[in-house]
Amino acid sequence: MWKRVNSKKVLAGITIIFGLMVAAPLNNDVTYADTQEELKEKRQELESIQAELIELNEDIERADEAINANKEKIKETELQIEKKEEEMEELEAGIADLEKNIEKRAEILKQRASALQKNGGSIQYLDVLFGSTSFSDFIDRFAIVSKITSADKTIIETYEADMKKVEKQKTELEEKLNELTDMQAELEVMQEETLGQKQQNEEKKEELETKEADSKAMINQLELEANELRQVGENAQAIVNSNNQKNIEKHSSQVQPVSGNASSIISVGYKYIGNSTYKFGGGRTSSDISRGLFDCSGYVSWAFRQGGVNIPASTSALSGVGKKISPSQMKPGDLVFFNTYKTNGHVGIYVGGNKFIGSQNSTGVAIANMGSGYWANTFNGHVRRVIN
Image 1 (cartoon, rainbow, N blue to C red):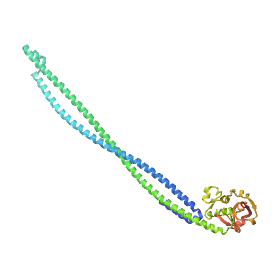
Image 2: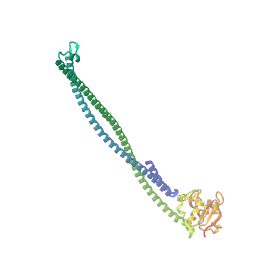
Image 3: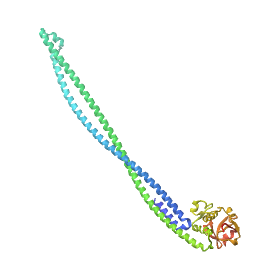
Image 4: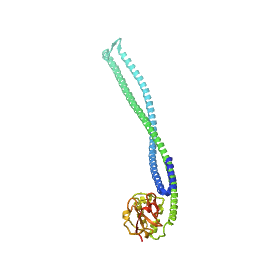
């Protein structure tokens, strides 16, 4: 970046030094426009970064909410797991007590069975009944057997019911405990992923904040540079204006006094003296004119338009406008023609004192001497008067 800034400053410096020769305002304006365009792009880039930062901050806020919610859910799940584990411990304690009761009932059944057995042989309930000695004894024995069988049946049914109840409770608790354990594992994975996403967002945010700072610094630098270039342009323009005034003062002494349109037609081009470039076909667009790019006929046509006179913009067409007069009758404002690469290949505007103003390929817009040297040798005596 600094190399680019320095190069522009060097260009601006060269612009000031050589402004009178290489179109200083143009070069500075182009540099300033480039800087303004870059400044606009950087501002748009900054706006994009800031918009992305706003969106990223919202993502981070949502991630924080999710993380906090997950923490609460994990904590709640852990408490539920602890509660279910306590219930499981209570149930296991209850199972132990029930098993003890079952063992006691089993012992009772064993004792009752032993009471109905004799020396290795099994005494069936029917044998007990038919072993009675009297009806009264039978009735007594039947009552005892009924009680024993009823009690045995109750013990067995209670045992089975208790076992089913315990197994059901145990199964339900194990299922709930497994469900809570799976939920806890899933929440922990989810939390880890959310934390990872937040970390990525934080890293991206840090990167964007760095870009934002760089963009702001670049914008500040470009604004300073734009101000410098604007000041350079103003200074250069002041120099050019001063030089133009000097040119007017300098060259007005070379021109015979004229009035009206001829005067404005001649003097309008002074601002381009030393500040223009010959361009074949130039002077026919506003862009060329603003940058001082003219060929000979383009310049002549433009100068006359500034005086309110419309004439063609080619040497061949200009050679037929107005009326032809002899060189001895020449006065400021007349068109003078020269045989350069062809007959009437070059044209200019006579300013008096054997001098003319025109756009020459070696100098751009300048006042040249047609009384001696190259222009004296190429002047063909063709003079045309467009304005009286």
